Image (cartoon, rainbow, N blue to C red; front, side):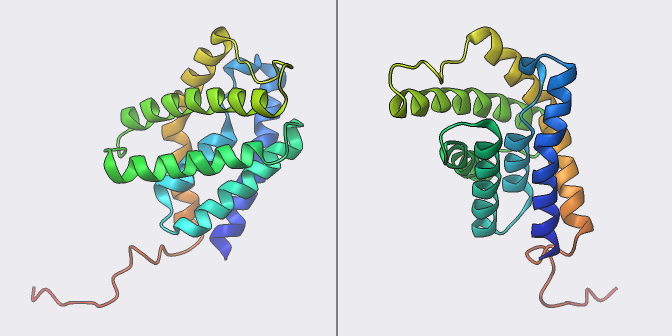
Amino acid sequence: MKRVLGLLALGALAPILQGVAASVLSVRWCPDLGLLLVVAIALCWRNAAGGVALAAVLGYATDLLSGSLFGQHALLRVFAFGAARFGSRHLNLRGALPRAIFVALLTVANALLLGVTSNFFAAGTGAGLVPTGDLLPHALMNALFAPLAVHGTERVVALLGDDDSSRRLLLIETGR
């Protein structure tokens, strides 16, 4: 329970930090901390059902704060969580460079899906179109901050309690 509350606190802190960064820097040079947190949760937390629920809650919080279609970011955060879990199972996402490349590609996919869902549900408004000049710096910043976000989330999960899946159930003496 402590881990869930700690990750929810990180999820509440992420839009605040992102808003502060957006007031200092251009929005395209600010990393998407909510997306990075969802990817970090997918890569370091073993509870898949709890991770999907956390991703949905973080997405709904983004929906409320951004004024987008309700449930749009929640759906995309759950997609990002699933993509990161799939990537962690089938790709080697243990190093900083593979994580950065994966997050950059996921950022581009997230922006494209955001545009598609916005145009599908609000046809003709052009609300979801993201210029390429804004998307590439944003993907680059997400890629640069991805290893840091995963490492920080791993530290928070480790500080808030034992990870049940990594603890041995039976202690076996090695005979030394």
